[in-house]
Image 1 (cartoon, rainbow, N blue to C red):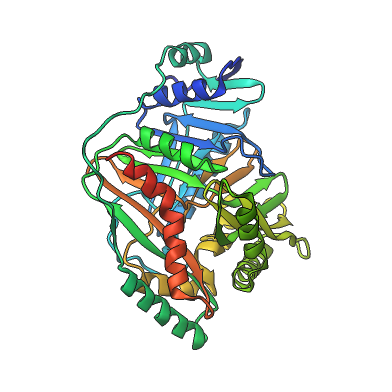
Image 2: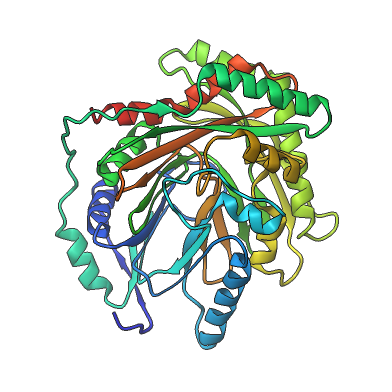
Length: 440
């Protein structure tokens, strides 16, 4: 395509889900695309219902070292080149291992997926769903709409090859590691640590689109995504927002605390929610992360503006109830996106406190490099607003090797019961294991 000014056109949509499926079928032709979908989940605040970015006009790919410096130059260069117009949207991710740039840390574990530590792109085509219909921003929106309309709705693919899911850590080893982490807490090394384990399958040659659709049907969460970068895929059903900027307000919504959702039994389900809300252990985890987020935001916000808007809110998601808190603040005037990321990344809900020390312990005791997992995926709008999720409840897939991976974890405190933490990890993995089991 020639890089002329794109046109934004609105097209009527009669059947939202069918049209979205046609869009997903159409976008498979692109080596890079990013779908962000909240599945019309009504958890405020949300600024977009569903966004799809496809194709690359401009992009930046970098690994920890000078990645944020390069991103800052990339953003500023686009502003300079677009003096007469707003710069375009940017979509992309921040990998967990950017920590090595922010602190004197390292990552030595194997990474079988291969996402870079940072990637952002300005798309050739932007599609936005809203109550009014489907907006297409591109050089020829009408031609693209006709292409989409002509696409078939994806049909399930049938395979006889069972997917063997393996666990990187045995139950016995997991319990031993948790006990050692609690000794670190007892010695005062840290207060809380998020410890994760990997589930994986080898030579699992499957359709990422079908995997996303199956996961979305079973677990349609508000920060879901389907993200492709060449042969690397992220199939995401995240319930958690990392950070959002709208105007001068920045907001983070960390999740800490989980209980089982019990559909079909309203009484037991209600008791599960009450037990979570009253759990001293979960409240302790949650408030520690809230304090960490408050301190992070205070580094980039006006003095005295950081506040806790909601503490210990219990929200229901398809598989689980979660304890969620909301922290907001007023940003320092003219602060840069990269300065904000330096202050708040990685997110406290996936690390712990104090952040640097727990990241050292994560590297010491976990068995797999996190990569894009527990990083963030999202967008930066032309106005400079942004919204990023926390990459959890996600499958990472390398289509070239057939390696498929997902990780789950929980917050560990001195009072944690190792066996219960193991069960919580399995609970969080249930939807993904069920989806993968349907391929066999």
